[in-house]
Image 1 (cartoon, rainbow, N blue to C red):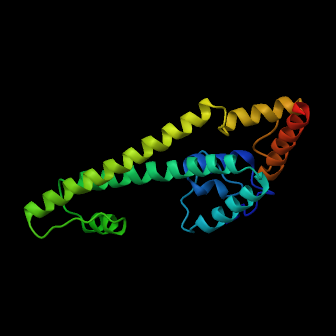
Image 2 (tube, rainbow, N blue to C red):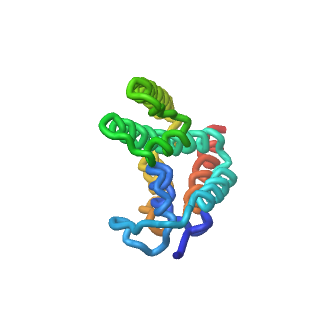
Image 3 (cartoon, rainbow, N blue to C red):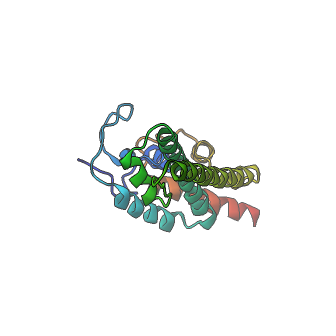
Length: 195
């Protein structure tokens, strides 16, 4: 399996799709991204390495924080929907795999009695709803940054680079390293104009 392992080769679109969706299959090279294959290999470590490279090259703490929040938001939303679905299923029928999976996520389901089972499902539901609150707070924070012009919205960044360069960029071929360098150059040029 061919995998992008560096920001020197990872296309801009793939990078942003991973940030926005949390789907590491965008690290796979030369596949049909509309029909992505299942992947057995854990790509978390590969992505963490790429993320670290991105932070080093971007040299912009706010930008890195913004995308880290986008990534956290995608993970929290996924976790919320999965936990909610498992708890919903457990309301109708106990399933050991779901009980164990929830336990790994620090949600304990007590099936020592019917009453204890019902109470623990209610407590689990409340805990999952707390996760939804975290998601909403993070979303509001991101919206607030966007309203202040501090977001690194992908479409806006591409437009900024294209406007600065004077021609369209191919985000399916342009590496994230080159894209970030272009953005850094634009910031530098804008800084000179202000002086």
